[in-house]
Image (cartoon, rainbow, N blue to C red; front, side):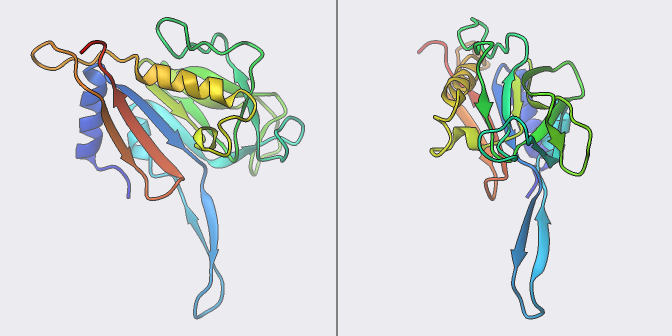
Length: 212
């Protein structure tokens, strides 16, 4: 199910208090199931619309594909850093300008606020159902919020493909770089919130201590 307003309020408060939020999503998935009246086609869309809109992030429900630049198939699109693609305040988690991150069935992520692109496709990528090739943003950062339109880069089967491991390291450094404090001024312990009935939706809020 989608996040409730009270859950979104709690995550919002967590980020306002210095926590870091990672939102991972994927495009609409279509499945075929058999039944008494034959095969039925059903779609499952991202349940992150409410959460994303609270943090000025919009996920497209269509997949991005690229027949010219990919990691084997047209849906396994590759992305490159946009600008310096800094994921940590120290700059330690900056991707090399020549790095490539390989996704599998990704969706575009766009900021409706002040977010900056972190990863973008080449100019030959397209959105399913459209003909015009253009660059697509697959990861966006807006302060303490990072949104990525794919989950596969962090899986056991894909983390060591292309420069995925470097990007995943950057994501981890981003998450542990928060500055969340308790009411008494002491830094808090790690907090995590994860929801998703399947791999198509996943949101993680993460804060870590800067001291014991």
